[in-house]
Length: 252
Ligand code: ADP
Ligand code: MG
Image (cartoon, rainbow, N blue to C red; front, side, top):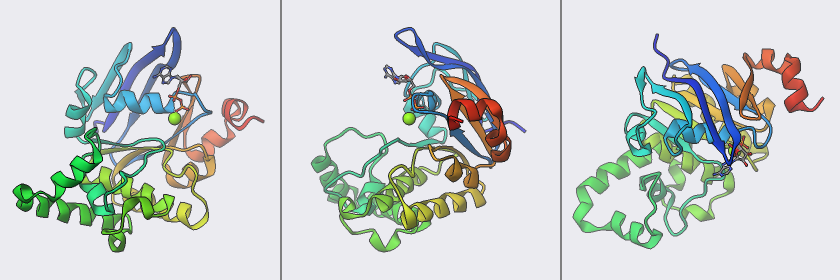
């Protein structure tokens, strides 16, 4: 079967230094792929290359068999790629549901956005978008917080609101860049539960996380990057036992 995502010999450097180096991988439909590696290994750069926010110097990106290497980010989003950025924050001044209603890649000013969302001209569309946003909040367990100012929510709930925003686009490939960073205890468990639920629904995902344990519990397979290159790929157990991974990442 054609994989949802296929990367062939993808490379990208900054100032002569490889951030991503000759990476090839394929993520089949329904798989949750963990992506781990030390800081600076190239994980976020890889996501940006997949989402079309960066162009590779060499190599190819294919979504469901269609080459998209030269397509801009908005076209890839239309083809079903959604990304939750590392350190993503909610838009202040908007409620949780309004945050979900706002397009993930918008750069407009917040005040204007809030006004636009509430504008009478778009009332019908607004109702439909709101319904979809509420359904997405429900999927991440935030339905009861829909009308609360998003910035007043705890960090873990803000992250789940970001996740809801990505889900609202009905992605075929969801890229999560360190969604659990800075979360502890119940917040971390709640996020893991939501990701596990999406996995159960068969959503294809890539999950970057620094915490190997977190990834191992959620991922079907794990790809390990070091200095931009793939140094291991396998089941969570396989990569944890891989001597190259232990040396590069686990620091043993
Ligand atoms: P990770 O997400 O695994 O921590 P990154 O993809 O953010 O790693 O970074 C990989 C390497 O590329 C790092 O050395 C980083 O400094 C470099 N890098 C990333 N983005 C840029 C950029 N826009 N300009 C210059 N260097 C960058
Ligand atoms: Mg990163």
